[in-house]
Length: 205
Image 1 (cartoon, helix red, strand yellow):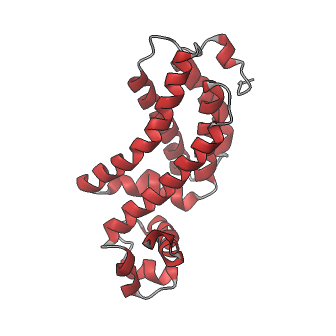
Image 2: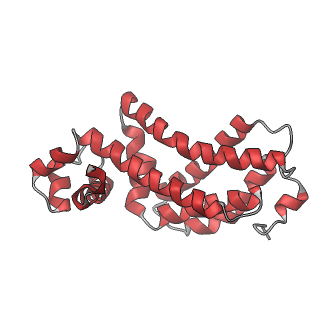
Image 3: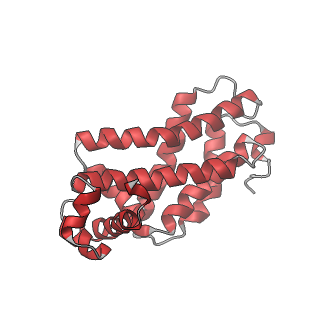
């Protein structure tokens, strides 16, 4: 399978760097090949074109993140703890890879409608993780029983997403990870969390 080959991932990582530095539209395939240390023609053994590189990059990174977060939250007892871990992991992943943050928050947004539809398909996996946390919180009484899950999911993803985008636009002048706790507290309030949820192991002091 092509995705298991080292050169495939070399090209993915190179694309993150080149797109972050030059912007998607100026990120020539030849530059990506040079950054990856492969011949231009090698790119086309793995990808149809630059758009395919971009969407594959997002699929790889988001897929790995979803797998990681699902494994991590499986060990947490409450929905509040799981939500905190999701926020912390999201912020940590992007603060530790600023090039990836620039690509996901800025460059992916400049793509055409067809690409955005494909990106939305990839995002569904992440949104399902949020849905699971919300449903669990409603079922065990942590969150309001009348909570609109769809609206709450949009609120959670939108808040996390905009927080990262603002951090990038401010040129990373502060520690993104330190915002995990206040964002978590804000979102718990938005979910109508009961006092026990706010003072769980994932509490905000």
